[in-house]
Image 1: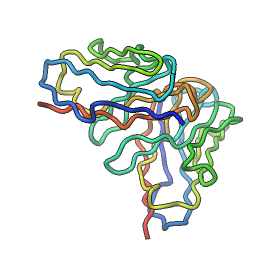
Image 2: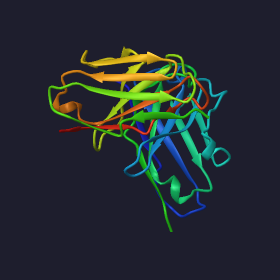
Image 3: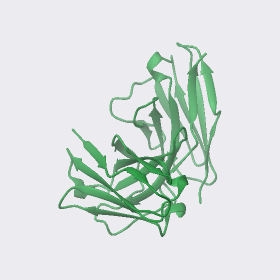
Length: 121
Length: 108
């Protein structure tokens, strides 16, 4: 059974940093691309960033480029999102999602339960 | 950057009836389109990929169609568990995960 368990969310002040983690199990992690998708309270889904299976290619959305960095450790089956210079508009539930292929140009077939990030003073 | 537009924003349907949801891309995405269902308080679930292929465990009352810029998700014989928000997502063009704003299917 595929399981994705996010952690690292919480309350942070504007301008601060957080590092999210997503521990994966139930599939061969190194064979699949992964992504982060967020959902602000009461709003729709928004792509944040993606990373290829081998970690060589990343796909950050324009609004997080230069602030958020996606990475992965295939030896630990773990996905990360380093978030710097956080803004109030980054407040959202952040979902980790498994992509159905080696590159991010595929659908997200499994999702984690999400971790809430709140940016507020 | 590609823009995905869903319509209508809200669809009121009686149980047992059919619902037709639309998704339009600002440029061609070929058949590289997925649909997701999200119920209140739950995680999104993959319904459809490749525009018309049902994901594992998705019942046959869900049908996807379209290619290029125009796509449709049809739900036949709506059941109580189908009332939810539905999102389309393209994965053809950069950035590879652009979502539509969602269509809420509510009980009439």
